[in-house]
Image (cartoon, rainbow, N blue to C red; front, side, top):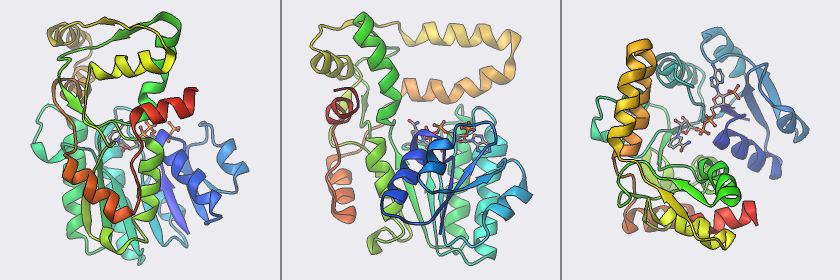
Length: 290
Ligand SMILES: NC(=O)c1ccc[n+]([C@@H]2O[C@H](COP(=O)([O-])OP(=O)(O)OC[C@H]3O[C@@H](n4cnc5c(N)ncnc54)[C@H](OP(=O)(O)O)[C@@H]3O)[C@@H](O)[C@H]2O)c1
């Protein structure tokens, strides 16, 4: 039995779908008010709880051999990105879980001080490695599904908002490929106790993305490109009213200001270990949007 946290999220939902397609038993950790009907219909065992509560984590883990941690935090980084994962790891260790798959983030090891999520994930990575559990740590780049709403808006308006340096590179990853990698991590020998950067097959500059949208929808893009200092100004203004929100925007600032790409060697290694070909962003968008 797998336990998937964040089962209603972009990644978790895809993990549960793929597990159920192969009829593997899976417990989906969900919150009462989120949309879990689809997961229930697919035959997932629904566990309703809140990852901020240790008691819920204990109950959710009964009978579990594999854990895929795929939850996000919605801003409560300390409780969810950090503490909930530490509790899950402790529980897994105490209860003989066979393998723990952790969703980290590309660039987690660069010491970004202004990015609470990166800091939390870095500490969780270290804790997991020292736990004695079998683990796989996945460090994905940005998920392709994040671009679906932007692509829909582009289809209607032809406009693409690009904040920051258009030459910054990233390796947007197909969220479906990432879900497959998370599942296969518990089966593939070469994935045991390893850390993998996970990205799509190509290194894209930010300005490649509207060009891809343009090809998918056969429409010339109109790119609006405010510099990063506009974002910084808005963030500083927000800080006057809500210092906490200003702090959590640090993670977004880090994502906007830096490059997050995998090298060709890293992708070749990933494809060899997991015996798969990574999907391009254009392939992903065409599959979802036609
Ligand atoms: N998105 C990216 O581009 C990206 C890139 C690199 C790494 N990652 C990492 O990959 C993981 C998955 O990301 P995602 O984009 O799939 O996340 P997401 O779509 O934002 O989903 C977050 C999930 O966490 C759940 N959750 C939030 N608070 C919870 C709580 N208190 N108790 C139980 N569940 C809770 C949410 O449940 P509700 O439905 O109830 O809100 C949802 O299922 C995250 O760890 C993220 O940091 C994401």
